[in-house]
Length: 266
Figure 1 (cartoon, rainbow, N blue to C red):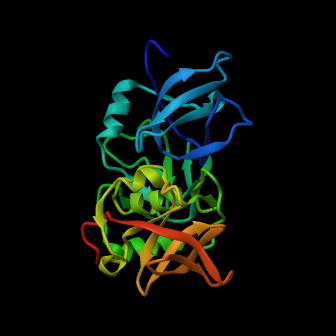
Figure 2 (figure 1 turned 120 degrees about the vertical axis):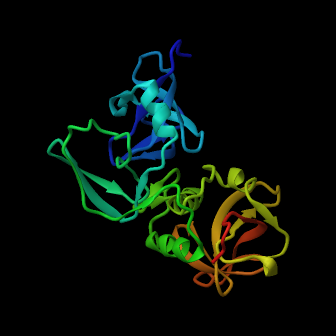
Figure 3 (figure 1 turned 90 degrees about the vertical axis):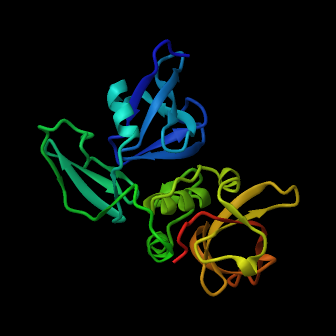
């Protein structure tokens, strides 16, 4: 453990966060541009930093070459400010003459406390939303469909590779809601809806196997449909049994629970 906690911020398009301090270790989540975190410890060879992500408390390891330090005071300021979130699938941000491709869900440096020095030339022409402004179902559905056909990627949080809980977390984050990272953690949030007939579009639907361990999540749509990341972000039919995949002509996921996160389902 470190005697003094270091703070960092993601200033790349995306950074893989791994289960262990090794390039061979599985990716368990990702940092997107603007995400900030604290460093919990360093590997013995100093090449890997174990971090805790501020937004969801998730822990994992990043390569030291991708770490950018920020001060403790600046970290505290960031943690209490509302920011802009990019809503274009992919756009450019320019600073100090350098162009960075940033992805939907990235945190943008437009606030009283800039993520960059005030004298740094900064240009961004994409679309963004206020991170603290809670949106209703219609906007949530619009954002969810921007990820349609994104390939499934374990640990992914981007439109070029995303997992089921990364998808729901990112969609809800853009709409002003904080979800935990994994599906089983998200299943512990929100208001429980006991029956599918009482569910509203925008509710989270969770799926489990015989051991009742939640392993999959999707977002309920209108007309008994669900959008979820399974192979790719897709829309399937949902009933009280679970998800029915018409391509395979069979049920693929068993319905376990339903949770309401949106305060205004419209």
